[in-house]
Length: 58
Length: 153
Image 1 (cartoon, each protein chain N blue to C red):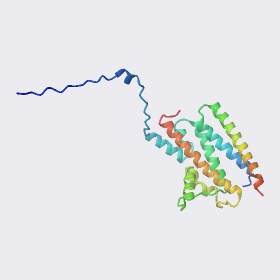
Image 2 (image 1 turned 120 degrees about the vertical axis):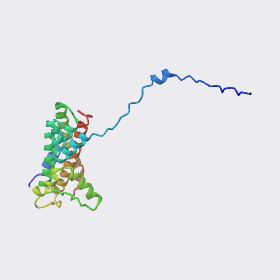
Image 3 (image 1 turned 60 degrees about the horizontal axis):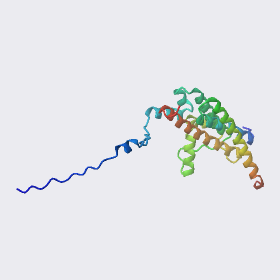
Image 4 (image 1 turned 60 degrees about the vertical axis):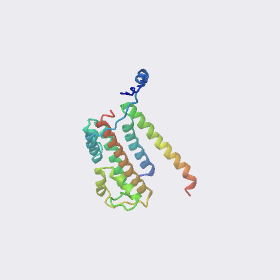
């Protein structure tokens, strides 16, 4: 299945953020906010780590 | 007849006020719940089913989509699925994580007919997807147990 590496990371972040929000928060609005926040952090930290590893990739 | 005198009894006053005033520490009892165990097994076998039985259909749908999406995504990326007869500790841990997906563990043969391919980076990602699906489902089973035991809303 042709899927880009970044798309795979986004899919992983979305699905895990959904589950974490459902586990950690009880009310609907808090759950949505938590899911969006953790999704954004997943992507930001993932891209940050990728850039930090870039000098060692070649 | 020479009688010996009765021994003296010493009465020590106990400060009852101070004893009563001290708040007793609340004991936390971890009582086992058989209903919770049944719900947790259902939640493990089919992701979301435990929460559905408890009437939490939104959470049930969230866990089903999350665990199912991670597991099927991992299979389509041709991630490695650890067999039950693993010999080393890493393989056993991998099997424990993968088996956490419940019914999705047995669907791996259906979605991954060509077998795993971890020679590419995406195949390695798929392995992590399946393991993450199992861990998320085990956490959801613990959550369902806590709700059924009355410790969580």
